Length: 231
Image (cartoon, rainbow, N blue to C red; front, side, top):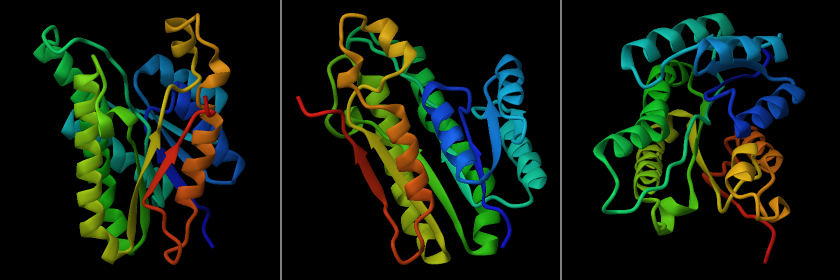
């Protein structure tokens, strides 16, 4: 059997770094999508066995060209892990159109463009897996989280719609929900007075992503909620 392959977007991010490690340890051949050239250089240094490219996934044409080149380099794509994303907070009356568009760009349009680029190849071979990362705020809302929640909710609704369309053709689509704060350097810096042991371990998110991507057609998992320790 050929080696399993996966493309990971946002590969230089705090969560994606653990996802890259988990899939590499499991023996997958990886294609890593970097945000900029500096991130690409770092990923190439740290993950020499992976194929690393820099792609502006918000731009449809660049996304199509970059993902096609990456797919050609890998030979085929078994899994697309849409990990690229970002967080922002702003009150309902203070939120600008630019802030909303920025959240839609990083949390929805990146996954939209990446998925559309690799989906034809998956459908052609009759198999594949696509992952999106949701959020608790997308399910229940959250004070001062409107643009973030809206972008994540759009992502979830779109991926579920894609799944309804492509599942009969052998492509599974799943959503992973971190149901709380994740223990990242960014969150530690933003919330220095909170004990990070009360947050979700990003390694658990990586393990969950690998578990979802490794299911057989007879045991698919469409949604997985990952919770922090009980209070």
